[in-house]
Length: 229
Image (cartoon, rainbow, N blue to C red; front, top):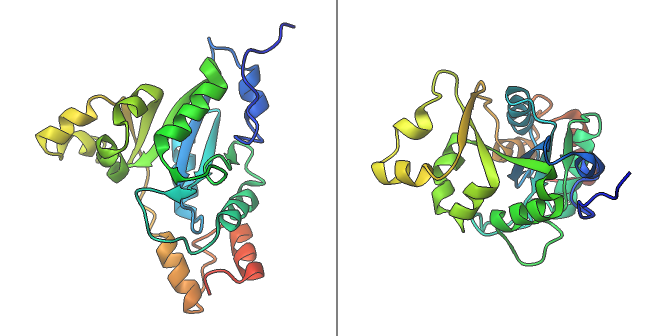
């Protein structure tokens, strides 16, 4: 067997690195990219990732906790190590999901374009990148750093509430519609999930139950380490 031309993907995806290295440029690994603060991870995050995975027959979804964010300058409520550990705990039994340290190990501010470039350069043409997000984030993409370069690297998988597949392109101002046209956007439906990380933190602070809002492994981790109390 000839040696693989894919660079060593150390520190990117413990679960998918070898699978991507073994993939062919003619049939690349379909890798979903889902970034966020995950402070903490909740069932809505997992529902979004799962819906995209199923809708587009992805090979795997990489969840990437933010390091030092540029667009959200508020401080985190849990450290990067805690946020990454919660992801690991929640995804341990989900073989088609993985967590990556790529952003939390990077020094300085976190820009999505830097992460996507690192993935593209490391995996070469052996991975096709699919950027998973909600419609609000989709609409905001043209304002991101080097948006045009992001558009070249990924296909955007944009979650829409049931019955609103065209919302991204039909309800924006003319200027934003034009800006969005540089992206390849594939909408998919998912039911709304009434949960947010801020709601989870608030309920923990108030001593209220959160077992229906976060994975059981995350709940155990939060209790063990006394987070958000």
